Length: 413
Length: 191
Image (cartoon, rainbow over all chains, first blue to last red):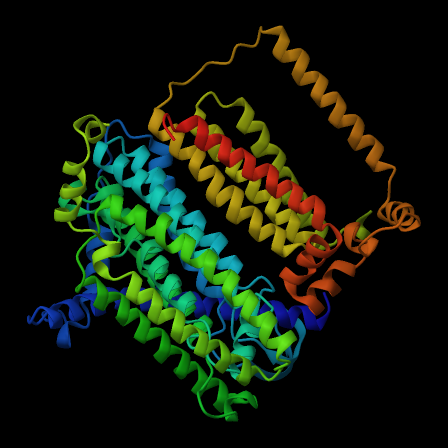
């Protein structure tokens, strides 16, 4: 191997170790954040016994999960029962690896290391484990693999609650994956590239995509809630109907793996919202952060963390605010509202970009962004006017009226 | 021999063995669920081979559509039906005839293709009028890597698809639409 290849490998391994340790530690702290926020919203202290302000609660939880007795249902499919938590955990934690966490760092490294020999690295080092050319498509692809863990956990437990939870998860994730994937196509249309670094660069030249692509953001956020199995879409583990859904039969660390996967998904969705629609590590109103340097990397890293943390908080906030959807409402929202909406939005954005670029001849990214923003204000207003809560989630009263107005035979069918 | 064994070659053989092994396990398992899962494993290994060929976008779509969506629906149906294990009946001769026949056809194709180097294919294609750069269709060297770097992973696929092969692409999509409409007509008793 050449010294350059060695340097690339060395830094890749270092980044891998750092990112995944931070991710797992962050997920552990996130369980505490969730309980603290829940306590704050419900006017109670939350966990406050272990350590100062309950800060060591995740440690206590971890120890408890490791030393608890493992139960295994007698008639479970043993191999798949063991495999399912891993299948859920692995795709969830590798997703963060492709998201750029800070501005690229200029590195000039040459050293004769023990064991490795001469190792060099010159140039800009992207602050993601792998800056893939396929960017967010990689995240969509691998997050879609997480459903196997949930579906197989439900099936292999050989319990009806688990099975229904697993089936619900499979149906729900597939339904919302479609809307999620389609909601990101306008991002691709505006930025012209799927890689995260290109998308961030485009947002630095023009506007953050929250403004020119507001509807995409809205659809992506809703689908993100469904993909993470969080309230108001936590049908696969609805405790009032299904005990604990797909992980009813799991205990100790295997149960914990499902929880880690869920929180890792929350982090990924929050990081994706921050990167795709809020400029990623970009600092607003200044170009100082694009010059490159150690200080810039640290500050933009903090910037990215602040944005991501806000969206993590938002996810928790929604959980303790909105009640759970009914299953048919969930499916109707996915297929009858979000899917046509995102398809129509792709066409509108594509036509608008063609008009702005070809007919009006505006090539400045900022001008294009403001033109699309004006369009989105109109579209967003129309959408919220037409899709108010009463129409999306039709209450019981109009439903029964509609049912009783049908003939009895039709009502039975 | 040892000189031309690169890291890429080793990785290719890892995933090739993985793909073929999973495919064999897929068709020999008696449990439908196990078969479906081995098929997912095959798809995943194929996606890895696409990455080795510099076709990252195709790889991601392979995982997203086949491993992530189509196979989940298969799994869904298998889980709902709760199928019994079906022991293999090795004595049915029509199955043997069809299987060996198909294997022979595919094997012959493979042997024929072996004599076709990428250079020869590119040469033959370039003598015919082609709507796209033949080096992109039969990548030799790093033509695909260069296209990915300049046009982006999506652009390098979209350009041939929507400019060179627009009509075949649209015809295929109409075919798929017909299949969807047909499925709805069959499933709905009353439209």
